[in-house]
Length: 176
Image 1 (cartoon, rainbow, N blue to C red):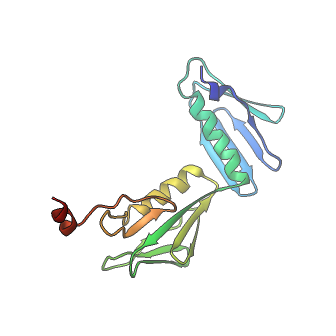
Image 2 (image 1 turned 120 degrees about the vertical axis):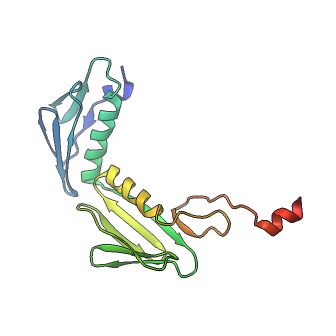
Image 3 (image 1 turned 135 degrees about the horizontal axis):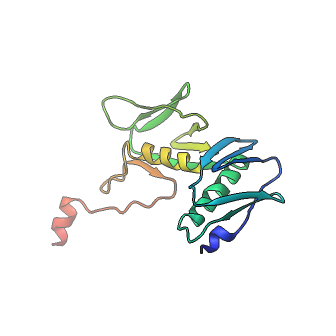
């Protein structure tokens, strides 16, 4: 049995949790999240904690982590940052949409999903929201518009990401 799945989830102050069968609704100051948990997992709410149980289920630890992320997301929220590197590369907001000018002939528009907020500061894009899965998926999609290339390092990267640089043709020929 999963050690992680056995640990109860503390429900923080200001968070409202409703369990209807396998559907879990978590509501807090940052928003509301809904999730359906697999049928082999039993969910109980008692003494301000969520308890999960299941017989030999490999999804017990995963389900517990998802529910814990939901509780944390509606109270604190999640945030990921992306950096834009390159001459003439920029991002800005037009209404609710994120507009990227990253070396293509046309600007790339990314629509803002419900519950997610974009903000842009100089060359840093900040994606924030209560749903950890959606924030991570959206930042990955933004990064895939123009991922960092290994020769000059231009592109969109996660903040703090190290891009392995390659030598160009002349430098590689000189060492051979």
